[in-house]
Image 1 (cartoon, rainbow, N blue to C red):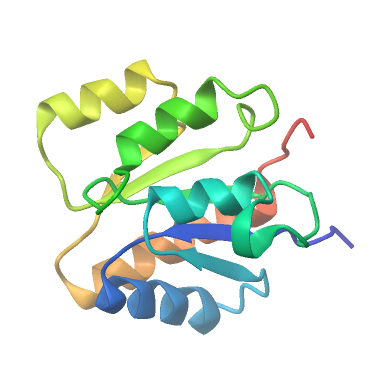
Image 2 (cartoon, rainbow, N blue to C red):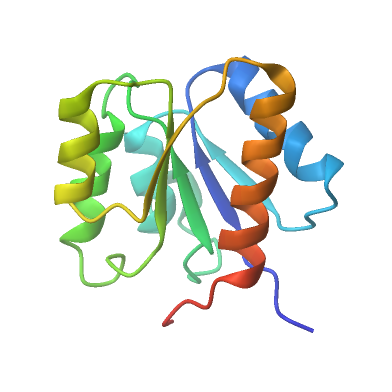
Length: 144
């Protein structure tokens, strides 16, 4: 059986966190989900710093990343991840409400693996997260 790696969810909106967790559990994805409320906290998790200093050093299966967040936004975090030799191969999926063309272009320029706009409809949101979770956390083979 494949070892289930952690999913790192970087999201500052508690409602979106709750919906994402519900979608993953509703579809029986047993991966552990770690929640970071902004890019600073996510970077601490990824680099095993701060409150995460004693965590297992294994990289997550995927980072689900919002763009608009306090302290450090998703685009800034994506840039750091892609230029860090220890982190650069982690799949990053932007899961955002931003439909702004410059955000989309910048994310792909920085090497995002996918850019998914959060559906407004509850059922559509649940389905989108389910498909993301199944593909990136279970089916995708990472090089690490």
